[in-house]
Structure formats: C-alpha cells, structure tokens
Image (tube, rainbow, N blue to C red; front, side):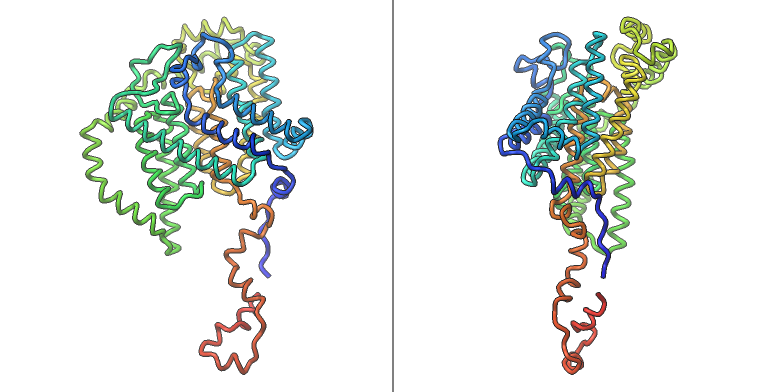
Amino acid sequence: MERAHPVDRRILQTARGLTPIATIPSHLFVFSVLVLYTVSGGMLWLVGINYEGLTGSAASKIHPGTYLVVAAFAIAAIEAGNPVAFGVELARYRPAAFLLLMATIVLFVDIVVNAGPGMAGTRETYMLAALAVGLFAKSDTPTRARIEIVIHAAMVANALLGLVEFGTKHLYFPYRFDGALLVTDTRSTALQGHPLGNATITSFYILALLAGGGRLSPGVKGSIILVEFLALVVFGGRSALVTTVVLGGVQGLFLFARAVRSHRIPIGGVVVALLIATAAPIVIIGLVSGGFFDAILDRFASDGGSANARVDMLTLLQQIPLADLLIGPDQGLVESLRRVNGLMSGIENPIVRTILYQGAILTALMMVALGFFLYELTRSSRPGMALPMLGFLIVINTFESLGSKSTLLAKFALMMLVLFRRDQGELRNPSARMMSASKARDVSSIRPILSKRFQKAQPNPRASAASRTSRT
C-alpha cells in the first residue's frame, strides 16, 4: 500500500476549522484588492487627494484600499456575532500575522509618544498586510479564485499601460510629491504609481509565474511573462530587473531541463516559443529603433546617486551614539545629518531607515515579526514560493520599501497566497495529491480477481486485473 504524503497538521485544522466570511465582506475584500492594485497616488491626486505628499489631512495619507480592507475586516467580525472570538480564531490560525499586528501597534504607539514621522506609514505598511492575510484565511474558494482573476487582470493592464506610456511618451497618472512632478524622471508609472513600486511588484509577479504560481495554462503564462518583462524594462528598476533576470534565468533553465528529461513538453508552451522566435527579430528591430533599450541603458549608466546613497547611509549610523541608536535618535539630528550627507531624497534600505527613526530595539522587533510572517506565508501555501520569496528579500533591501509608507507588503502577501494557494480538497485529504498518480491503481483494486483459465485466454496476461491487483 502506498504511503500517504504528510501534510502540516495546522494547515488541516485551518481548512476544517475556519468559518468563511459572509458575502458582503467577501465581495468588499475582492474590491479592496482591485483598488490596491490599480489606484496610485497620481490617480488620487487627480481627484483631489494628496496621498503621497506631506500637506493635507491625516485621513488622506491612508490608501483607499486600506480603508476597504479594514471595513471588510470589521464587517466580517461583526457578522460573525462575536468580534472577540473572531479575532481569537484568526490569531490561532495565523499567529505570525497576529504577531506582526501587535508589533505594528507597539511601533505606532512609540511614534505617537515621541511625535516621530511615519504614523500613516506604519499602519499602511504592516497593519494592512496582517489584516489582509487574516481575511484571506477566512475566504472561501470562489473568493480566492476571484482575487486571482483580479490580480492577473490588474498586473496585465498595468504592464500594457506602462508600455503605452513608453511608446507615447505621455504619463497618464504621473508620480507627484505635494503636486510637484518629477520632470527629470520620465519612466512609466502606469497603475502602480512610482516606477520603483511598479518594477518591484512586476518582478515578484514574473518570478511567481515562473515558479508555477497561478491556475493559468503554460501558453497564457508564457505570454504574460513576456509582456511583464517588457514592462519591467520601461519601469526602470535596476535591482528588480537584475534579480528577475538572474533568478528567472536559473528557474527557466531548470524548467527546460525537467521538461526535456520527462519528455513531456506542453503544446501551449511550444506554440508560444515558436511565435516568440518568429516575431523576435522584427520586435527587437522595432524596439531598438524606438529607443526601448536606451531607457534601461541610461538607468545603468547614470543611477542618480543611488549607489553613493547606499554607501553614505552607513555613515549616518557611525555619527550617532550607540545609546541613541538603540532607543531612537533625535529626529532633528537625523534630518540634519541627512542634509549634510545629501540623503534627503531617501535612505536606500528599510532596516537602516527604521533604525534611524525608531531605534534598533523596535527595528529588531519588527524584523522578527516580519520574518515569522513571511515564514507563515510559505508554510500555508503549496511549494514553489521560494523563488519569489528570495526575490522579495533581495529587492526590498535595495530601497526604502518597507521603511516608509507602502502597500507593497500587503500586495506581495496576497499575490503569493492566491497564486500558491492549496486546493481545499487537498487540505482536507492528506493523500489527495497522490490520487491522480495512483488513480488507475485505485480503480483496478476494486475489480474482482478473474479465474486463471480466463487469464490464460487473454492475449496479454501481464495486463490482467490479477497482476495489477497483486502489486497494491
């Protein structure tokens, strides 16, 4: 008898014990994902909301998607009948998300007490991710399927709009800071807003598809990956581009070697490969004549001081006493040192930035909570997430990312959970993953054993029911 494949007990309990949220919060959750992936700060500025600037009301500094997630979570808790029991249940099944939420509250209180910067950023960056993961854990299979459709559609639309902006030299929703345009930065902004945010989430999406994420056919995946990679170039994120090329190239070689070794190459993939090979010379000539590759070459030739900023930011840590670094330096001193060292445009690492503004102790607390949170994402999903997770850890450390206000963590967590989600049937039955491979054996094992006289009369006795049954 073939041995069942072990499945994590906590995952089985989650599948059996969690009660799905009701219809209204479910639809609201799907809509909030759509807003998170398609509404940028530049788009909000056009309707009178200064989301990415310093001026304006405190309420305008929170993304509409965050408000929708909080509303969906609150409605789900109220409809559950007992909001406290609702929260306790989620804390049991998603303890790392709960830990991240508690650490965020501690960080938020510290910022309020010390009148430091980043109150909105704390709620947006970490609290949003924790609540979104909690809602996803309570979502049913149809809701998760709708979220996957929303993410695929939003990412493809974002990539196509980025390519259109590059071709027309016109930005439809340009990045603004307090209304001021960055006239020297002509990179595409599309639906995600800032070019770095676009490049980062596009990189994760490409790596996730290459790692087998999603329920798309190989042909559709190949087409989307091609479009997303072209968009990644026009978004201009060098770290994201290099990470995607290196990790994606290794994964591509692995997939090709596995397909050749198994002698099972998908027809859809072959068709897409032939189409790409046929159209590649024409496309490359057109891109060269249109200056497509000039944009990325300019980014590598002139980085606007980013490389020097990554070196200079370490000098800030050396100029501040150790005792102050532990509990949080004086904000006036930090701002002064940033001006002296020419780092007013940004500190190119989230850990260094958090240490400078909140201190090493709270930074360590947040990093531990974040580490458990990412580990929980991996444990609650099917295999394959290691590739985009590695890309995530590399890219987020090349700019401020999680050190400032951003919806990046929530979008990454939702993308990974939905693209690498486990089937409910597989969760309920530990041996479900073995069923397709042993289907013929299971069917044959319920057939009666035929007589020897009948078996000898068959032209191929090795295919008899008795011989098949004897191997079980």
